[in-house]
Length: 489
Image (tube, rainbow, N blue to C red; front, side, top):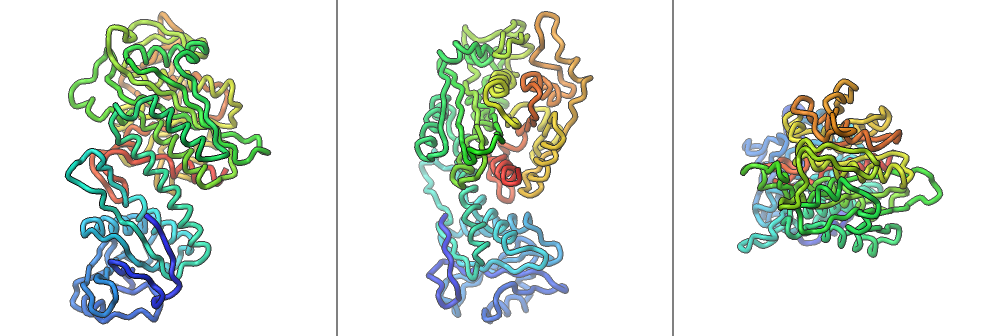
């Protein structure tokens, strides 16, 4: 979706629809645009009660007064209740309506809203439109990609234009993440992710990539990644994407993402009904790739390394076995309580390596880790566990700004007892009770003293039905959250 700007009504280009926003003020619709705009057909519709300006309402009028075929009245709801999030939702609903009508180009004002700055308004409008303007139909032979191609904004300030430009880059990165997670597991393999990393490092001068192939993983003694990989005919990899936007700074954020490109459950085989969407088990990797794309395209003055341990959790005669003990990069031995708790194993080797060699100021990991998190928080919020209050608070604040909200759970020492093993240093499962917490405590064993936050995106990375601006299936969660966090770091 491209964006262009025009300074006046008279200079506006041709489009398929003209969108005008209204709020409810003193019980009546009020137009939120410049005084020179006046269309009798809109007055008639309001007078007849066909349009009340409630939040998300849109009325299409086939106008004779305008150059555009359609005049769309867009309701923003009560003026005093408007927030950036409500703008996202409302303009997302507008885009969905445009897609149904096969509208390709629209002209709209940026509404002037009391209590919100022009940059806040620009962000809400642009995010809502860009994030809703997405479909993954690659594998549907009877459909063509029908998306909103262009938006023309009238009378946008210089600051608003800058925010819109940044927002579109971030949204493109979110959609990149969505595409990776949505595509076939036989397409998005560990080797495919390696190619993506190398492509990005050629695209951006400040981004470089380092790949550990299977031989290098064996040399480094990353026994947990190698254990999970044993049942797959595809080799594993550890992908590291290094971005240096501020070389003079010692601040260094490491983002780790679980990259299980398909999860059978291993010998603890998943049942029918639980396996069909397991291409999404690299949702954490998708988030990391989207984050790296966003910060590189924006040219943020930060230092970030994205780390993705990636493999399939396949099943064959060589599969790793429940009850056996494997040694990870850290040197700790791990008893396998369940081969379907594989994500924490590959993350453990990645976290241990990052903590020891990458000199991180902080580590943040993303993983579709536990079904228990879906039970606890559903698909609304991401579960967060952390060993550092400042990091947790900063991520919570960024979550409120982007509406990719996180909810912190405890890491009480009492839960650690559930991971005790009689035959190894630690067990990879802690039972049903507090399952998300014990999974995080397992990871905590491998980060040392580095400030760390674990984001369990099992409920937010992949959803069964679309909402306002999150499509069905992959959502690209975490990209906007981390970009917002890094801007404030």
